Length: 266
Image 1 (cartoon, rainbow, N blue to C red):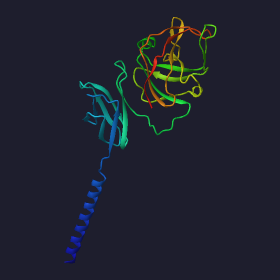
Image 2 (cartoon, rainbow, N blue to C red):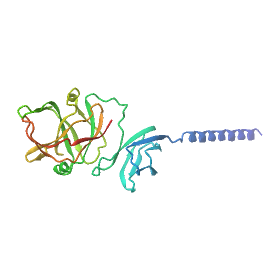
Image 3 (spheres, helix red, strand yellow):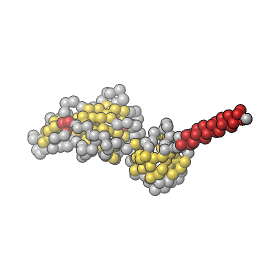
Image 4 (tube, one colour):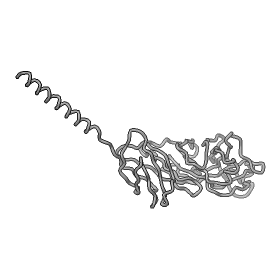
């Protein structure tokens, strides 16, 4: 009799343990979700995340331990972008970039606005859509060396003068693809300058040799970029280059005037 009672008690205890384990597994099998926002989302676009398609710029998405697979489709169900992101729990934001028909559509994570901007620094992602520059660099990645304006005088030829900073800051490996990460340049000399972010950037080939046209070096002029914002998406617009010899104190150079345009900043 005692053996039967002990047996029944043991079975009851085991059953309780199994129920507790099952309950623990159920409680710990919860999948976290995030509210995903996609800025610049276009009507007709659809995004597929881990095999599930969505057609909205604000969606609830399960967060995996690793990366979530992303595929972006246009209104004709043509693939525009494929990649992966490790989504943040609770709330996350991506940005859709469609600059023009020559530059592939891209999705990127939005820069963290809670991260303090580093004084005197700008972060860039630069993409090229200038066909002449692509031809001059043989379609290979190239570099831009930024030289900031320190002094500038206009007027009659005898008065004209421009002085650039002797040391340049370089953004490397520019192509027609949006880079995955930002690069940083120093704009300390522009912070209190009346010219703001203004100057010229020399184009160097992949091997760092200068690009030449008609025996002169090639530059891109830039200006009007908000230095109060820390992160920028810039693109080289498809303007034509021309010989520039306005300032007597500067050797003539081949210039793509105001070719560097802002697509996005925050």
